[in-house]
Image 1: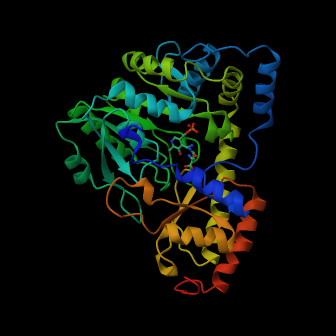
Image 2: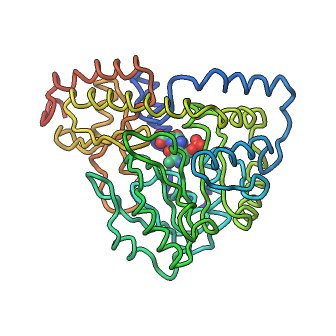
Length: 393
Ligand code: PMP
Ligand code: GLN
């Protein structure tokens, strides 16, 4: 009754955990969405666009106003020149751009290198198009890849490489040297790169976001994907975009026009406004998230975890094996039902091996009160046996 291609995939872990969390009234530190609103002027810009009759179909590849704002943003932050007319397609979130990329660029049997753990939509985007994801592991505890493992993963069948920096769920920010090696290998093997940079503005300490597309030889072979959801705390708007050379855009637009045709018009005007916010907005976003990251790390340490503090993204990973409550999936169910806090087990983000079986992801894009309430609830972990505890099982 159903197509074979969907058999390996169930409902996403994000939807499952959010539903369970709502049902039992848990504090949801699972699915990555802010529980606060985006900047008031951005919300106002959406309302104004609706009031100004921006309510019919948008240009299929994006309203000119938004494409110009995306091009200016690329110039401002990366010194990268992108032609607004021919090198940008606006999509319904980064998710749609990733999905269209699979259908636009892969033929059945094409191999695609992905760094695992990898965001949950990559494997379906690749396999629905007939492609084959080939994982290269980011090794704990620092979640870096082994250059030889990357070299070995590339074969004569490799067509593309998907990368995500800053990285969900590990928080790794790929360094200049790592990106340089990736760029050299892409050029050497004539690979297409799909670079998911949705957390480009969520960075901590000295971490710097570098664009793969700006490395030598990469401009003509990279599709850079981003989204307004993370940078402006409006994940429900689903306004994303894909930048890259005209031939890649032409292919992507052919798929995009038949998948959604166009993305919500008034929200495109609001994201155009958001992308033009002053530098101070982006600096404050960064320092605000750094403070929340540090607060959640304290909460987790007090609860007995040893969190791996990220360089970017809004997620913290932590190992659960020493609690003696099974793998991270079992631990998370116990955490939700007995402690009242929800997180995300990341084993489903791996294509092969059992590397992440004991890793749990907590997100800190939450109100201070939410983080504090999670902290109060997690004090009970120690009361119920804490580290090494076998109480109840
Ligand atoms: N890529 C990564 C790495 C993500 O974490 C997410 C989740 N927000 C997306 C893509 C999807 O972004 P969007 O909500 O814009 O579709
Ligand atoms: N990107 C979000 C996360 O990693 C989830 C988005 C979704 O639910 N599709 O938590």
